[in-house]
Image 1 (cartoon, one colour):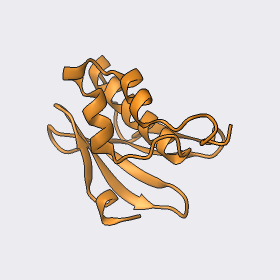
Image 2 (cartoon, rainbow, N blue to C red; image 1 turned 120 degrees about the horizontal axis):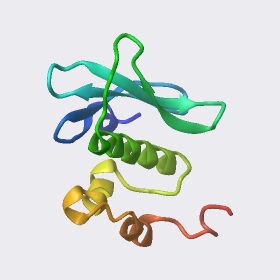
Image 3 (cartoon, one colour; image 1 turned 90 degrees about the vertical axis):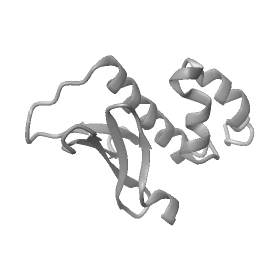
Image 4 (cartoon, rainbow, N blue to C red; image 1 turned 90 degrees about the horizontal axis):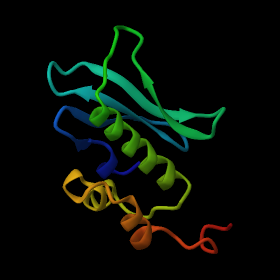
Length: 122
């Protein structure tokens, strides 16, 4: 894990995504509410699904809007694609392609940054 990953990774209007700690092959990230600073949950590797997933906190009830869920989903999607070697960019570059003012154009990102099927070993 390099220093780039050991900091606040991304910030939305209401959420902060930050690095928590590294595991041998994966990492754990906190999802933090900007208002109050409570940790709403973690994004970490779920071995049964071989996938990064969002684990909401069990310490208190959380409520999420569609935009918050979309932000969490986008970050999880990025981590999964990066882990599988499909995306070869830092999150900031990923976000530039999918930011809300660009209408979340994931297809644009795929055209620019995704490996071809042959490169991905498929």
